Length: 317
Length: 294
Image (cartoon, rainbow over all chains, first blue to last red; front, top):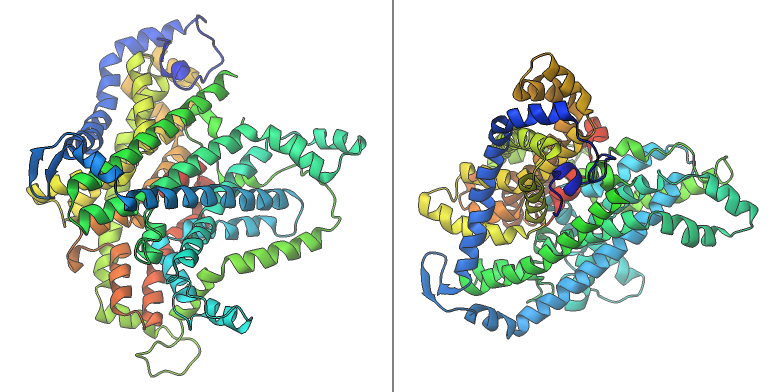
């Protein structure tokens, strides 16, 4: 934030004026006269942010440096909770599952979202109706869709395992076998998330000038070449941003996993969030649990700072 | 300009924008083939949703009716469980969250959009970082603090957490919308003697209904769909909201799918109806944010 010309350029770069461009004098006079008003307008938000967001964060940071339970903060132990957590196999297993879950979630939903966005861009009878219907997995609460998925796959007599058995796959225990449970959770995440990617990609595709395709057609470019050499490069920035956003969603995700498998069987589908929850609320180890949440927080702050820079870069371009 | 660049705030893209004017392949060649493909995909993707609707209207294990279609599951759940209480709790918490969130975010968004200082820029970055933090990091200490002052297992405590978790994205969304309103409108009002506050209320807010609606929908979805916060905070059935209520009902009645799905339908109707009616105000930034780790 080097510039002092304020948020509209510093943070967002909105407006065409570059640094040193003439300012609206009338506006500035009035806005500085209204400085007290501006402070009052933003005050409730700042107060709430400090009380509900910042204070708990500081409290949690402190908690992660102490022994103790939910009720009592124990003695100061420095980074012992962190070293404790980092030497637990469960932590690394959760980190590994979070990574797999995130990779599958991001790229699975992106590929499906992209394919559908490309399909919906063409002329199709009832296209708008399909668009609205395909958004539903995203609109329906996770608690509801996880219940339906449970009905579909949970027991050996559920429809999907029964069908798999009839097709000769043998008895598949979708939520009881560690590998299959991990696959099922990832597929569920993709099912929930692809509409978001479809929406993002469609919005980006809408801005592509169609005349480039006419030119490409004249040059005899194949459809695949048009996609990989024209379309994807044009929407690459938006794609990149949607990947980072989806990464944040996947790393933060609790209900998708917890409601379908509870993090099980045993700990096969425990992501870092689920592990933090279980460590605090099922094993009553507050310090280590908060330490896990904090290690995630550090990663997410880095990711979101990168994203913020990306967004800003777009405006100044 | 991609969605996310609008005003530099997280994206606000109405669904209606997806209806693309010039398509890459004009003409009708092969459109029925593509239609069939899309139809098959949509039918398969929506299976979990039909399952929910279909099972909720089939005679449940407690009903003696043999008809194909029945509302018996619905009368059963309202008569013999706390569903009505959970529904009222969910509606109350959600409405209050939406009102507070918008009331706080709109003025703050105005400052973010129009303010010119390093502090404003810093605040904007801070809000952006806050919204990507794992909610679990805030939930654990808030639970400890609220347990001390009697706000755990309490709907007021829940509203406070929801306001905290929606406020940053809501502020960004409002700011993004205000960015799209020309400054000349306010400036004209100031010339006519209006104060900054007067200009904000009379000029900006009056022209911001779509932005306010998008923000309200976002806050609605966070509060309505949240499971993690409610799971941590709520312990007694009489203060359950629908997500934890449905989950506890599911655990107690795991074999009575008709009733479980009827509770599910009660829970999915409000957001689905909202989406059907207001889908042009559904925005990427909003819904995206509303799903972040909740």
